[in-house]
Every structure is written in structure tokens, then in C-alpha cells.
Image (cartoon, rainbow, N blue to C red; front, side, top):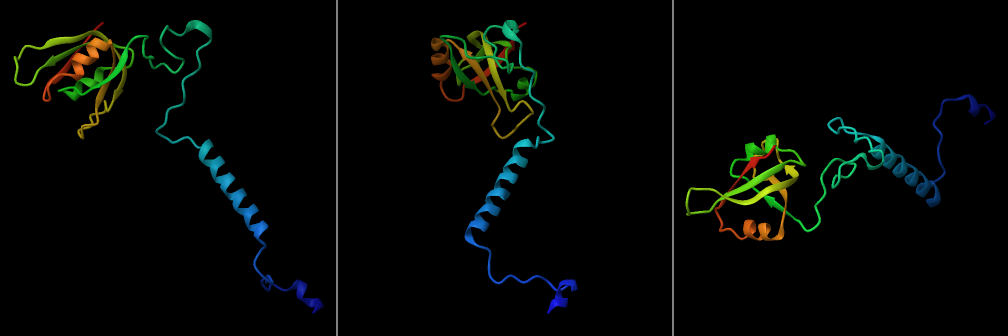
Length: 160
């Protein structure tokens, strides 16, 4: 059968590839898939911020731009009575946290003046209750805010 070399017959294997060959092919496929996943940037993901050079970044602000928790403060998530207010807030802003206790007076009281906004979650108008404001508060202010009766409504006044 010397003339079989010029034919277009399919190549037939005498058996399945050996186990080591299958492991190598699987490992290469997994590594290539992982590399593709790492190097692919989703279309909705903005590029990362440029790293700050030296001490030019503000105190309490890492190079990523998000404020850090100040010394002696605690982070407290707060759900606002009006989630639309989250659209105007940005990390690093200062706000006065107000509360209207449930069943109490209609006059709001200031719980935390000049609270630092650490993060704004769900500012795009989420209506499923996932929107919240993450504030840096003094421990005594955090105790007052968390210890309010259920049904209390929070609001913020944005500071300049």
C-alpha cells in the first residue's frame, strides 16, 4: 500500500491518546482560557485611575481616589428615605445626617454633622432596596444612628 500516501482518506488512530497527552492538552486549554479572561476588559468597565505620584494625593485618600476611614471613626451604612439624593453624592463629600424618628416629632434632628461619605451604593436609582450611603461616623454618632427605632427615616444635607 505504498500509494496510500497520496489519498485523502482520514487518519485513523489505533487507540485514544495517552493520559499524559490529554492532561497536557487540558492544561494548555485552561491556561489559554484564563489568560483570555484576565486580559479582556468588559465594555462597561472604565480604565483604572492613574497612580498618584508621591505625596500629591490628599491625606486620607488612597491613589484609587476613594476616601479611607479616618482614625477613630467607624463605617456605617445608611438607607435614605429619599434614595434619589444618592445621585448627587460622591465619595469624599461631607454631609449632615438627619433623622426623623418613627412615630415621634416631624422635626428632624442632626445625628452626625459633617459626616464623610465613604461610598455611594445604588446611586443609579435602584428600587429594590439595595441603595445605601456608607458614612464615616464617630463611635457615639454611630451608636445613635444604629440605635434608632425601626421606621426612623434618614436624610442628608450636602455640605460645601
